[in-house]
Length: 130
Image 1 (cartoon, rainbow, N blue to C red):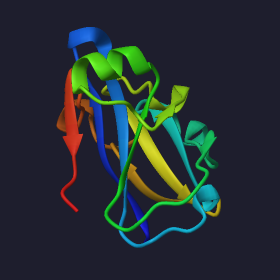
Image 2: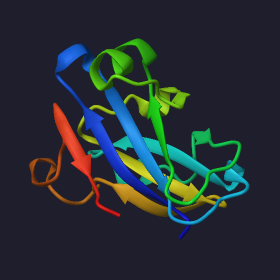
Image 3: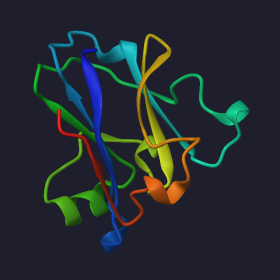
């Protein structure tokens, strides 16, 4: 896998929210990757089967992309500019975030089948060390 989900955050302060992805290898065409999110409590029939956001451009190995729904809140809390502003970055801390490659789910943060309080990141962070 050339790209992975490395984080999601839903802060209490200024409602700063983000999804973070990292390129493991060079990715010359990001358009094969996309993201979707859903509430953890959706029935299996409501789990996204395709991305609601498709990336563009390219990314070098080791680089990150930061996706938010509100650039002003993101900058106020994190101190730098997000790469992408899109509603898929509006995670609430109980949302499952899914990474797709070529229309197939390849990674996710959160779970649809584990009780929420065993994994949620409400007013907090979910971070993966990669």
